[in-house]
Length: 121
Image 1 (cartoon, rainbow, N blue to C red):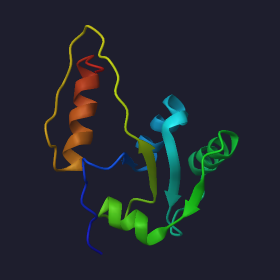
Image 2 (image 1 turned 180 degrees about the vertical axis):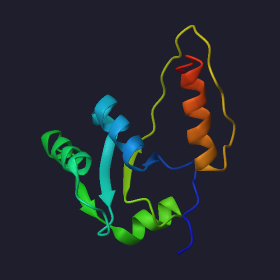
Image 3 (image 1 turned 120 degrees about the vertical axis):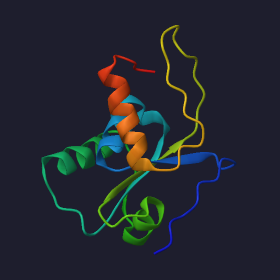
Image 4 (image 1 turned 135 degrees about the vertical axis):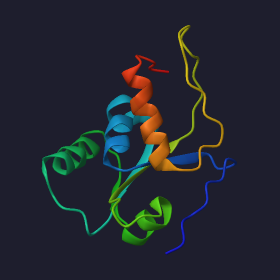
């Protein structure tokens, strides 16, 4: 299946994967439009907790296997969260700025490395 291209003109974007979805929903549940999951997902405590959190916050939870694969572009991603784009102000601190990152694997490594150096923005 062909990966869906990101369009910066859209009013929403996606958090791809379980970790990103949990972080988004725990920190900004008010901007989450919906959580989409694949029928291939394995039920475990993390998934059950995520589903329960969605229910508590009135976040739509929809099985959309093909959509999840088209956004993620991988077969091992089972959760996608759609959220409304927003703006915020940055704290006066060290920051990492990424321009047009193209590989989600590299992005995860960059974020983990930044946290290792105590850069949280």
